[in-house]
Image (cartoon, rainbow, N blue to C red; front, side, top):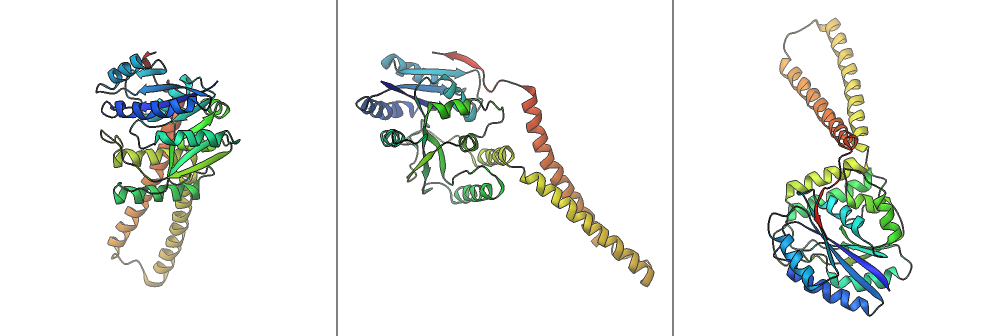
Length: 309
């Protein structure tokens, strides 16, 4: 029989894990009838609650369950990478434990991938239940990424997808420290089929993604898969050089024609503040790219395992 590995990153998910297990066990049992056995790999991303204890309890009931527990919280990107490395299946699925990624779609995803696709991915067509500002910012991010990046990132795309082993191996070759999984999954290519579904709310517990964390995550995505901000900084520099040249010509001509009046210092202060602010903005962009490069050169491990089974 072929084998499916289900990778489930977990961070403080003690409340939802029993519910998730019931749902995923039901689906994986159905897949056995289609000739597909399963393993479920939980990645405990440094949880501070009883998530690891819950995983061990589930493992005692089901020998298909395996787990990796980090020494601290390294983030979802590291957890996904660890799960892919741990997986042994011919097919690998990534999904969240909060049931916002419906396990019931796995059967349809498997049937589609058997038709010849390398990957079957999911995308939300609605963001019902999310704050309006958060949804608006997400749409703006995807729209901007389409404009500034050569890597296509689909609006509403989730990490929830089913992949063939060949695609998983290609992803594992990208061992960069600063990881943006949505971009990596698109960058490696392969033939992808998209399944659309309406947004579902988590069944228990609280989301770990605040607006600020999502904003920082979007910045990571822009820096990882686009050099447009660097070009923007260069354009700003060129524009202000041209403005400075025009102002010099204007001041010289005005001095010859009307002398050198002392009034006008408020406008001068405004111009200096504008140019100084723009310079700081451009330096900030350069600093972000430099910081990412600095972290890559350190060659630190993406995650550290404390316990696994």
